[in-house]
Image (cartoon, rainbow, N blue to C red):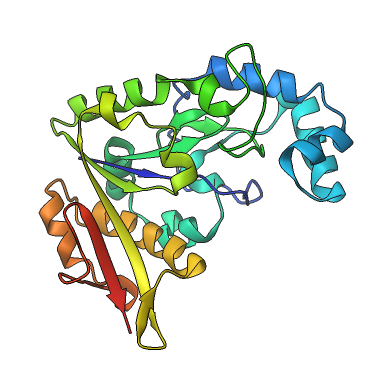
Length: 251
């Protein structure tokens, strides 16, 4: 069983990772190529491409301009958004990190597909960015079926054909589900509001991280055990769940 997550826009390269164990990203060559192209853009053009503020554009222009000598850090400790607040990787034990390395993957617009302990550099580009390369006008075209093919290999290594989709739609869209030929379980997280259950982005993102942590800490390889997820007050909702679209609610 493999679980997939989205990356985060926010990064933490200030604090030290709690382990020195690290690996090289599978698609490092492809990432370096994208970074070299992005490094040729000035901050104004990069800001327009990424739809970010001038301050962030300047920061990321500097990142890509100095790519070859940039700082490295393991992905699971470098990402710092809502999902990763829920995951709280810094408090995982070495044994739990090892399990995550074998059963958790992160889809990235720049790096394609990452294992938790793969070393990454500070960057900013979303999978949905319309960035032209010789392979097409978008990053989806750039990656083609590479992410899918690598996921298939990871699933085979895990001796399972079950993918737990905890990624956002933007990143999951990079997976060719027909070619993957896996059972895909997609958990969603909803909160009660005005007598209805709705998805609130901030809470849903955090819950995806909490479910990843639940999988890791309990060393879950049987997807049926996910119905026991109760972190943050969420519980499996049989009534709202349909097929492999599993709904967890609270409130």
